[in-house]
Image 1: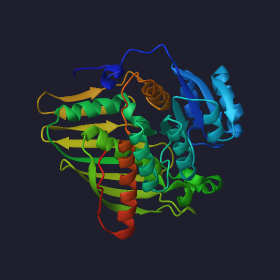
Image 2 (image 1 turned 180 degrees about the vertical axis):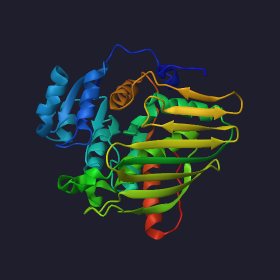
Image 3 (image 1 turned 30 degrees about the horizontal axis):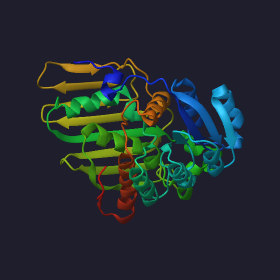
Amino acid sequence: MLRRTFTQLLGVLPAATRSADIALITHAGGPHLSAYIEGLAQTPEAGKVWLCDPATESQVRKGLGNKLAGVYPSPRELFQASKPHLAIIPMEAALAPPAIDAALNAGCHVMAEKPACVRAEDFARLAAKANARKLHLMLALANRVDPVMLEARRLVQSGAIGKIYGMEMHTIADQTRLTAKAYHETWTAKKSRAGGGHLIWLGIHWLDLAVYITGSRITQVAGFTGNVGGQPIDTEDSAAIALKFANGTFGTLTSGYYIDRGKHLFIKVWGSDGWLEVHHDRPENPLEWFSSRQPGIQRMKPTRPFGYTPWVNHVVRVALGIEPAVLTANDSLHALETVFAGYKAAETGRTQTILTAP
């Protein structure tokens, strides 16, 4: 196999000497907030951080130390006092759109924790504004900088397994979390605040990766969603989705809270000249493929980390213009539209067509 480094796969340019000022707009219990704090602490290009949320000041100060330059009670006051390059917005889905809008109005690039809305049309307006102002707007689809996914994308798009025929995916997390009374009171368990359940919170990653790996957008969606575990929540814990891609590929996704603990994460792609499998829950051997053009099954063992710290590093460098973005506002919108098309298909029993392209 022709091995490439992580930076080669991303097309990274040499590091800049300047740093980016960051607006961190969040709230108590902001999704993955601790991961973003760690990512900012470990990103050399992340300079001053301006926090919008006095309730999390002690947590952020503990993680960032002298990088924390100021704390403000509202986005309006933050952007009046500072001119950050990038806003990182880990917020409840229903609360995120106004914060994103304020950042874009201030001329700031934005990375928002998904789903960042409870209706696709709310994010569509934000994506249109970002595009009009030539600003980056990215959801936290951090798997796009995972070396395993980058290599899977390279292999598929290089034609290593030939013309793509179909794909099968599952992303399964624990049902155990749904049994806790404390979880029942969180925003993620309430459709009006979260937009949905497992599909919009975790399944969205795999829907986005399906597009990213194949290089083809999703055009039609059919499927089912429901609460198979019977917990007192009004979001789905299970979804089974069928997909049609612009290049003619068919695919399926099973997205649910099923097991007692841990995760089961899998992608398989079949092509005219072979196949490829990603076992993301098997770190010792996460990627293997077969091509009729070479003997035997090939395997990749990753040599670089993945997760939120590399993702934060990427979006900061994008804001500085040091490296190209792996995700656009339109890509982010397409992932959301696919999710909401899945919900509509389940509600109506009819296949839904996605008209916009990433």
